[in-house]
Length: 251
Image 1 (tube, rainbow, N blue to C red):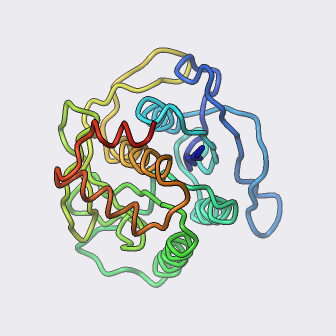
Image 2: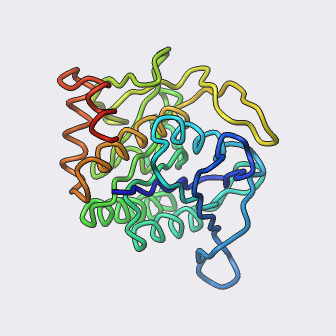
Image 3: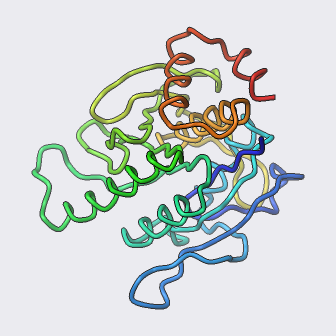
């Protein structure tokens, strides 16, 4: 089956040569009323963050269809309301895999403030809904050990940490309060806005490696539940299934 992977991010530069022949639907969060909504939008990426993430998915899962949902501005920042609107849109549209290389960072040394608790609860509720609807939500964990990242901490989604791996196929199982799968996230060569590639570092760029693996699994098995996808990812990370076998299953 054809699998859609949503990139909830800063947008995607669909004119980049890395996406030649790739089907990419483009949407954006709009704040025209009291509640942000999501609608069709022109392609584009002011910061390059989303383009890099989409490029990583494209390399590892070239058969997937990409859906860009722009929730961040050119400065790489966005509101919590915009993030929620983008995630709710992806769940409502039943997009098979959602890559979320962003989140809310809070210091571990400080208690969660009431103003932050509401946003975290809302994000957890969306993550739970995604889980129940069979939408595989893959979210980046923190880049700094002294921070917590939400919703990447939610256990109804797949949280991702970064490793210094030269093999982009490599996954490792590391179940922690912050994430459960570790993927390559150091000096990752991925598309840059305007053409060409550059190196990117962070959990933001480890996350789409896992999203791509999830897309491969669903591409073989058809529409499946999130537990099955998670179990398959864990088997791969434990070395019970090889990367070659995963690739052949997704073809």
